[in-house]
Amino acid sequence: QSVLTQPPSASGTPGQRVTISCSGSSSNIGSNTVNWYQHLPGTAPKLLIYSNNQRPSGVPDRISGSKSGTSASLAISGLQSEDEADYYCAAWDDSLNGLVFGGGTKLTVL
Amino acid sequence: QVQLVQSGTEVKQPGASVKVSCKASGYTFTSYGISWVRQAPGQGLEWMGWISPYNGNTKYAQKLQGRVTMTTDTSTSTAYLELRSLRSDDTAVYSCARDPGMAEIDYWGQGTLVTVSS
Image (cartoon, rainbow over all chains, first blue to last red; front, side):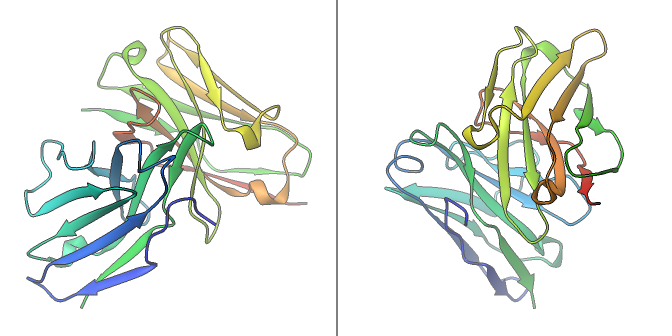
């Protein structure tokens, strides 16, 4: 069971906007920043969002992140077929004294 | 460009040890930490620990304390993960990742499958 809670699946049609939630607690999301990763099977995961809402260079601005209290969200607008992948959130946990991840959300583009 | 290239698939018997390597290129190896993360079949991501190639400082996940050792060789820009007393539930894909500050993973290796089976 993952420390951070994500929905196991999400879906949308091309052009739509989808959001993926990540729920934690005061010891992780509530007191530390959140990163988001995209993982296509057979490839190395890719950093999409760091420090809650910052995009690395090369990540399009249709991808955004936000955080409020002990929850965070990843939003993808203008959905494209290439967005079909697994998405993971991550944050440091002060109680466990380690990095914790969400269980991952499989995004399907219908 | 930043690249982390890991060693190949391993098959080990229960009780044995495994050592996975991760060769870094495209950046100054000693300026960034390395985290190790694993993913068992059908499971989520699990952080195993972090090492600073600059001074060798390490931090291990509590669950793995005593069974895991992370090291680096700065002459070859290579990080190593050793896991001992392997059990069947250690079967997983093991990935190294560049991690400047122990919770800031920005680049990942391609992963190494370790299968523990008799």
